[in-house]
Length: 184
Figure: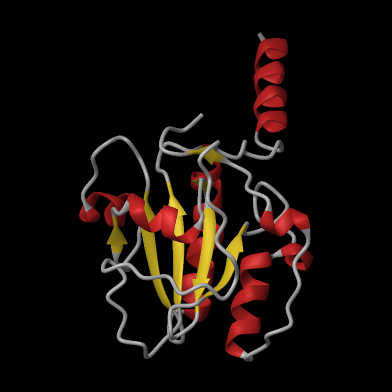
């Protein structure tokens, strides 16, 4: 019994450390690209942070604590939103109540394509003019515990300090997690 549990844990740990396969029809979106989507409805007072999320994705669920800490720390300066990408139906209230969120919940898969997102969880940071500043992972560790590789936080700080020369490693920019639209 312990061997079976150990094997399942090991297998899942290995699976979620592998990069998410890039879809055949994937269109790359470059940093600096204007992201136009009516679901954003931005008043241009603050940058926008989009958290691409699937409630059925273990990686998304592991990441929620870290995401909520970013909302708490930067919520007064950044407009945070969750973009739910799931074949199942959810209401904004269901997501807000289940995960203790008091921020807008969006259900627009076209937004994922516009930002070049094909897995969850993924972070997208747009400047006040809705230009793509960062698209990538939150951290290199599954539980988002390594401050040195807290890519989303580094991007938030960089944008707020108006840094235009941030360079991220492949670990920050290659997608890891669950494929879209299903959690595989």
